[in-house]
Length: 100
Image 1 (cartoon, rainbow, N blue to C red):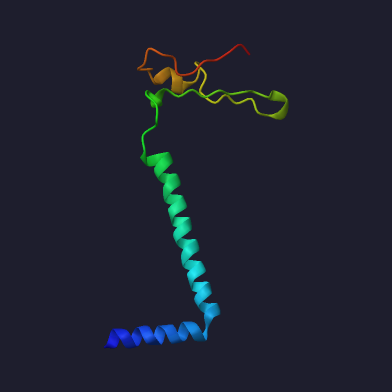
Image 2: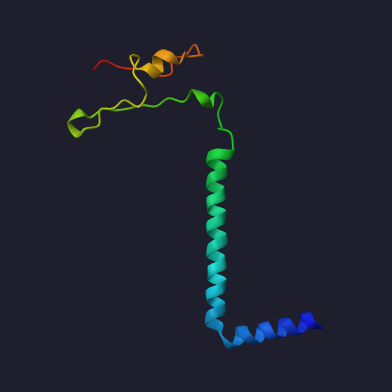
């Protein structure tokens, strides 16, 4: 009997203050929607494997614009210590540097 009286009381309070009820429902809807959107994004980006074979062999293409101050290469040059100390375990090159 206690559950039915609680439900009746809840309905009376919602009818007495409908603005508060709308605010509560909208807040819950916004929270659930944001949570679902963030989980979908994290799931698609970080948790699922890439949808093509050899996903670890991705290529980065970089343009340099020295006049604008954007001349740092995206992958290390062959003369840096990172490229000199880390051997490439693949027969395919990981970075390609053009002239200049």
